Length: 292
Image (cartoon, rainbow, N blue to C red; front, side, top):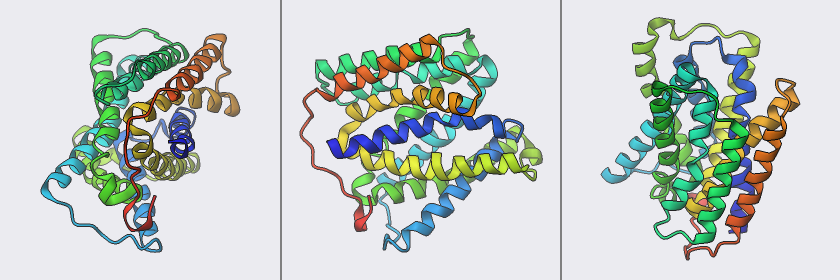
């Protein structure tokens, strides 16, 4: 299990840095920007498969369904819901709802140990405190719940695919499939205005989102997930607001408050409690063809 801890913690921390760089691309059409992000990430991931000897793998009908649902729910729906929730009620409400991810993934284990549930509950409390409940409304809550479904699906639907595809190909196939889906949503929501030439800061922001948050974080998460299991891996989702706090402080966007620091401390304490829970028996999943 210990081999998955650095990957899971790094992946969720990197996802948290999204808040710090999102301001660079805030003025760019939202759905077109997400399509560009995933297109670049897919191109990088697919190029990586060649030198690693990871050939294209033909999926069964059920595996194709899992991949389609993973992409639709975990990538497209998640991004659309986060965007719309932020528009409706600001980032605090969606951040708080997403802070419950560790608890839902712990429950997905089937019979999680009391210690794992206790650790997940502490992580949820810390993420909620670090994010701040803020003010919300019904549309914002509904969009936030949709984002929660997408975030949980991002992990659970990948589990049956990882033994056959490995972390790199699951990341590559899902990001590639997300592009036409996002283009379809963007054409409906934004029309032909969904694309324009990005400014230099916007280009840098999209480059970071594509390479670090998508390629690197996806690979790290999908490498760690089968080693830790959804319950234990889910504990590290509490590091998302911690990553946002640290990034905001480093970039000088926002200095952490006492509540931010208290929340971060609770998240770390909850993770430590959860990691002491007995791990369910499972075989480590190795990426096919020598990948992650």
